[in-house]
Length: 514
Image (cartoon, rainbow, N blue to C red; front, side, top):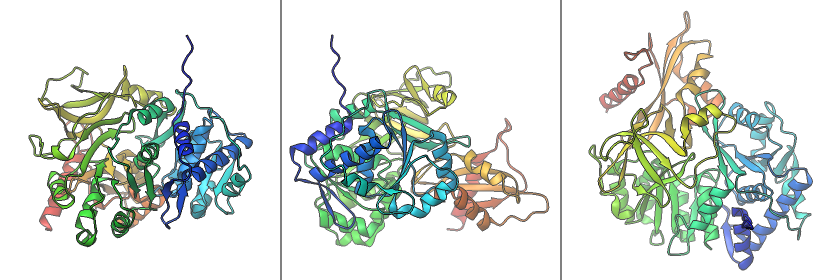
């Protein structure tokens, strides 16, 4: 029996572009329109240059690029030739960039010409064998110029279904962040399945990083014949201006960004009639704020719950936001098609409806494991089930509710922060003898990083200096909102740092100060 040839997601996109090469598929932040034929040409040009430089199937290419059309072209080119892409987030410090880069042993680094300073700082710590710049830059040959020399060349696809299209780093409990291996077969199947499909032609606004979920939604939008409008970052006034100017139908936001839009004065004067879907997810959402958003924007809110390790797990439609849990929290929805959810106790046994335990899931998008971390993989991925680290329960009607997290990771705007990553950094500071890093839930259900430190003998701790130290070495995503100076670290009855009591003290102080 002959096996059906595998078609990866880039091939699907390129085929769709060929059907109507003149249609506008991307609109850049400066208003520049990119047509389907031009995007396909650039993808093949980038791919041809990489192939000629010896890059191919099984290689790793690190991409340091902001939100611009070429970020998509570069990813598509890397994946077309069977190489995997690793994204470096702009918010991370050079040391963190270097740590991730060294861990994946890349064959090449592709860098946005506008991020030359960040690239130079990275290369001071780690020097990939090949560096190409997207635009004129002193850090490497201009990939845009080189690709233009391959005009008309068609590069054959090389990826297989079990190959990684991406390694997405989510943080970790050791010095090296965990890299989630995301495979071609699963992503292509998601593209074909029509997951997140709309009954209308979408115009999707990218105002969060293309390196994360916004990039995958962009893929789905383009394959469905829609258009993607790309902004360099999130700025509420600019988002509202784009909605009205470009007749945006779809947005993806983390809840804190949704609240920022909700509170911005431009909402009252912006024509929002084009908006059909505002999807949110990535961290816990406030039921009261979601009610405000539903009143302000209408029946367009869609909640998405998922993880990089498992893909999409559950979804919530506009008419389901009144479904609340016992503690008043909004549900994250029902499991999506193809996803199985079980609530399990500490021994791994399934629990009945209504009882709280760890959320374990099986989906078509399960990761291929953590990059070169078999022990971490075995802990999370067991018998085809992902152990999410989230605590929750299922209702009689099949709705999933989140209660807490098994792990101590802190979900912030931009990603995940594991306390031990920051603790290990702080403990290396000469003024610090001991420390505990913990997350504190704000009233709107978003989270922030906080730290409590014990001064080293004879040393005086300056909270502002420690915050700047974290920013310098790990980036603003990791910077504690507050640094408390304490005499000793509080412990639980079993001798572990008592993060909950420290978080409670921060909340109490915030309440007392009004």
